[in-house]
Length: 194
Image 1 (spheres, helix red, strand yellow):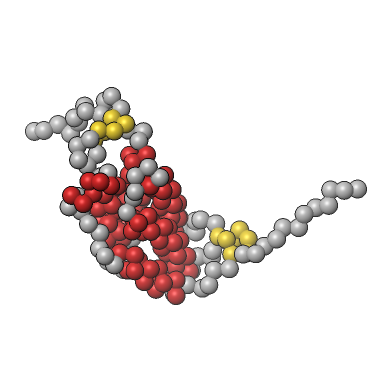
Image 2: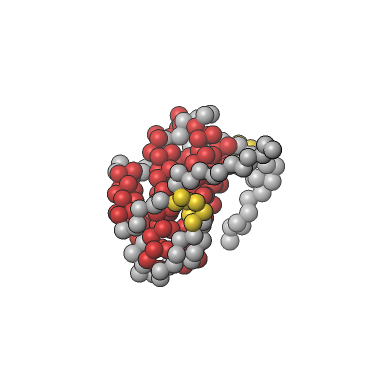
């Protein structure tokens, strides 16, 4: 039986698509690691939902898309055309339709809300912030080597999706959203002069 460990990364390098080895501190590896963390968080979210929950197919599709994206991210732009992994042409439009549908089933947002409320809502917010971090790291990578625009856009939409899913979860579970402050709130400054 083959061993799961290879020892090839013991000196601080790892292989990317195409066979090249790069430092484990490379921004490409950091960006991919963030996408991987997001995928794991979505997997945890799926375990919190019943198997026939209407979100299960959507969340599984997102996980599959993220796996393909990780392969593309791990490939230098000049070699990407040889990567067999592709993304659906309508990937962004489909995501926006899903966001709009869920958003239409929620009350209009008028305040900044605190993450939490139910375990599922809290996990959705965890997915939201992980999507944002992955997006930031991908933009850092994009400054060095072009990242496909649909990947950058998809990660941006994902954070919006998880935010509105968290709102939906709270509103449809009967749990009150905890408000930090209303949009447009202006704090009164205390007059410090005598």
